[in-house]
Image (cartoon, rainbow, N blue to C red; front, side, top):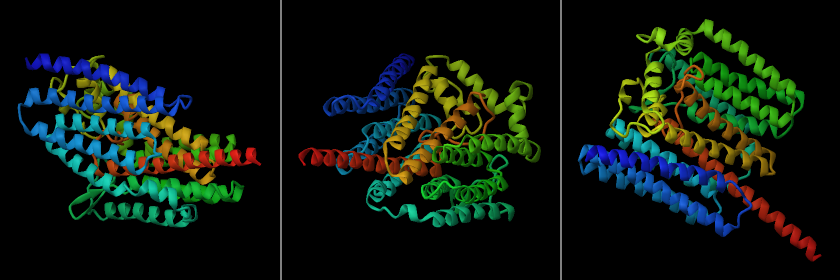
Length: 453
């Protein structure tokens, strides 16, 4: 009976998620009437809760513990709270972004609860705190227009936080994570500053480039960005350094429209990769594991090999929750959570997950293209690039498309700093979306006044 429930819920989750994913791209179109758009998004919201409930029925069938339903009820209440906040407090917010945020969060809760219920509850507690902390962010973005003036405040805070990690790592007070100094321990709580500094970094670059794109300004901006990247390299956090660098390069290209800057940046990145390979042992290990993980399966290639085994074993439809062996993959709850999703929930489900992340990225770009203020335009582009490139690095490392970089899958992977920073990014995007809607309303009113005159 248990196996039958697991099989039924597995196929039902894939079917419902496929519908949800289709709606994601349907909802991106602005040609539909507002009423029809609301109906579509309402259907999508219902699918979030059906998928969440469906998966927890499978978990209950296996564990036969009433704590499962208590955890489910707490998580469902949080998802309802997020939806209510954006429906009644921020009425002009993007329904698609809210739905995608809830869907990714729900998938994270499901897979983490399957891996470790206690860890899933800690993630839930962090999510509750993150919702409370970011509640005011869209209002702040919408009402306060002095953010573009705080250029060097962003730079100073960001550089200081990153330097603290380097100093703490060198003095031996913090442990390394797979060769990199990533976090600080404050009051027994591990915090990864780079997760928050990347947001400040985007604001810094946007505030610099919106003022001018002259050669002098580009050089100053590049120097400030280089300091951030070099500090991350010094702390051996090369995954974050790559995200910072690519984000800056994309923002610089869009602001200047200069292929010279872009091509120069790509060449610099290629040269830096070669230097990093020869300079850092853990980079060489990851490259060796990427080239042929089976040849070094007993050592460096074990993690990637187990990830590929899990994805291959799961196939298109997955083995079902609790039917696979995702715990054989080291750090499966963080860097390699996508492999656990693929093994037990299926390759089709995993592809839908990628498509939902892609729809988030497209929505970010859509906001960046339509908002008029150069500072907010570059901010939306930068945050979208941070999110999209992080998803690419995580999934690319899991499937052996690129060497593993040790970054998390936003909303899905376990990690307090990653979860809170992603909530902040999505809240800022909502604030920018509301600004864009306000700009569109002001333009419509101006046209009506012109016609009336």
